[in-house]
Amino acid sequence: MKRSNPAAAEFRRRLRAGAPLVGTFIKLPGPHATEIIAGAGFDFGVIDCEHGPFDRASAGVAILAARANGMAAIVRVETAMPHHLGAALDEGASGLLVPHVRSTATARQVVEACRYRFARGFSNTTRAGHYGARALWEHVDETDDEVTIIAMIEDPEATEDIADIVAVDGIDGIFIGRADLAVAMNDRQPGAPGVADATNKVIAACRAAGKPVCLMVQDEHEARALHAAGVSVFIVGSDQGFMRAAAAGACARMRSTLASTSREPVELPQE
Image (cartoon, rainbow, N blue to C red; front, side, top):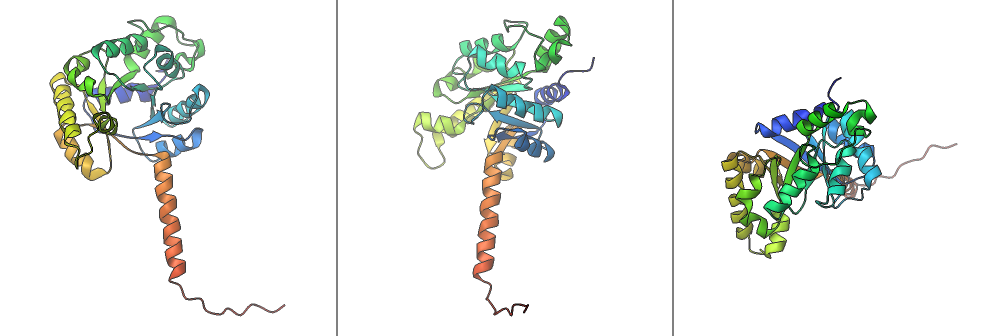
């Protein structure tokens, strides 16, 4: 039988190889935004169950839309609790973005809940298991090989334990939540020097351990500098952000055009 989730296996292979990958957040429930993002050519979409209005059913629809269009579906889960991790994986997620991995102990607990070879609860009757079509050990082995686990470093205490966190077997990559770090550190100075120092520390630890780094960026100019520094995975914008920017731009252009157009009398046709 062919792999249940070829996009997941390819995403993990490329991520671990350090290939440049580009994704965006998906905040809007339903299949349409995910289909559009996949069609635009993104390597992955992050289905945001932490800050977006998703429940398990709507997250499953978005995951299905990504899979149908050959895009890796990474779910940012609500918490690092095993039931949130397992539910997203059973729905067929290519991988997880796990918030608030504050310590080595948390990182190990996440891996245990996500990898069958450690302690993940087994079921092959889910979408991930082709609804029972994949045999027990086929499902166990292929799923552990396919699923990507990215730990979010967004708490100051995590940066102090970063060398040990990145060394945990089963953690595939690290996402640095710079906005969360800024708020947690109350780093209000221009350029957020405290956050910059923490970011550089995490990148250095990841490079030493051979683990890829993921960051959210404003644009391609910021991505270029970070790529040179060793970052390989980039999240830019979100579906609702793209829609808001496009809608605001279209509205502004229309208003500007109408305001600058002289209104000439128009002779209406007679009946």
